[in-house]
Image (cartoon, rainbow, N blue to C red; front, top):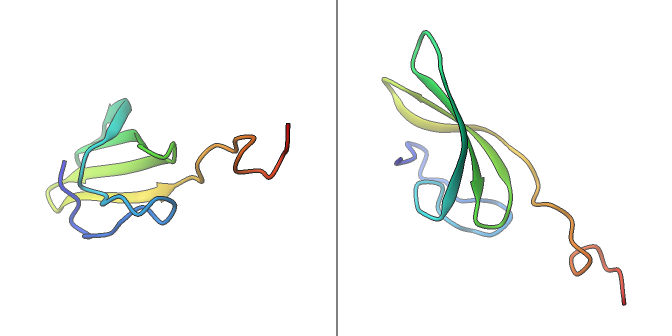
Length: 73
């Protein structure tokens, strides 16, 4: 998929239209399709695929890990 926005993930800086991402699920809609993906950093994304191209319309934060939360061992 190629993003029509030319944007990057605000959490890791990876281009929205580039690999790696994992397709979590796909759902056909009247206007095209909705694809749920996961960025390499773990951020869950909702992509709308229609006649205008591919757009990320929603994005979560990456999952909190012990390292990123500041927790110590």
